[in-house]
Structure formats: structure tokens, C-alpha cells
Length: 100
Image 1 (cartoon, rainbow, N blue to C red):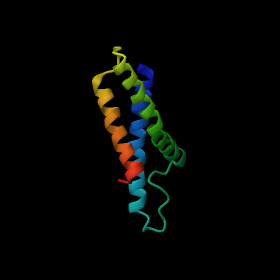
Image 2: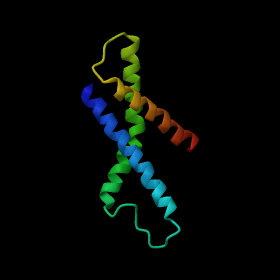
Image 3: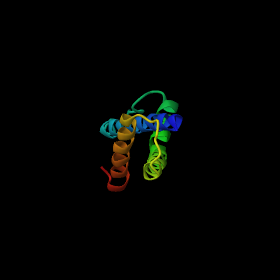
Image 4: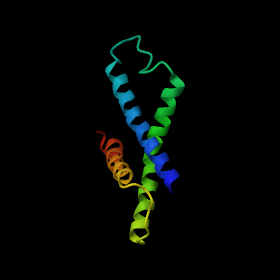
């Protein structure tokens, strides 16, 4: 479970980076010669794929934590990691469903 929680944090960080890259690209779309936020397209693609798949991974993680909480099992995951992932799940739901 600790590995999965670390994976979720990494994916959530990639989500933040992917959103920032999208905002930067939208701001520079006025420029005709803009080729991307960063010049390494495979790296940018990796951030986007990991970042946008973070919604599903984060939802699974929070459901597992909810099941652990309901069954009153102790989890070895730090509290800050649980809070960070839950907060980002709320932001991701807002980003994709509401269009923030």
C-alpha cells in the first residue's frame, strides 16, 4: 500500500505539471511559432499521460482508503499523503467535470 500511495503522489504531481503545461500552451497559442511548453516532447507527453490518468488511480486509492477506514484497519500511510491525495482528487473532479 505504501508503494501505491507513492505512485499516486507522483501521478498527482504529474497532473499539476500537465495542467500548468496546458495553461502555458494556451497562453502562447497567439504566437504562431510556439512549439510547446518544453522542448522535450516525450517528456511532456509522459507528464500528460501520467497526469490525466491520475484521476483514475487517485479515485481507486481513495476508495481503498475508505474501505480501510470503514473496516477500521490501520493504514501505514502518512496523514499528509492521504490529505494531499484527497485534496487533489477534489481538484481533479472539478477540473474534469466542472471545467475549472
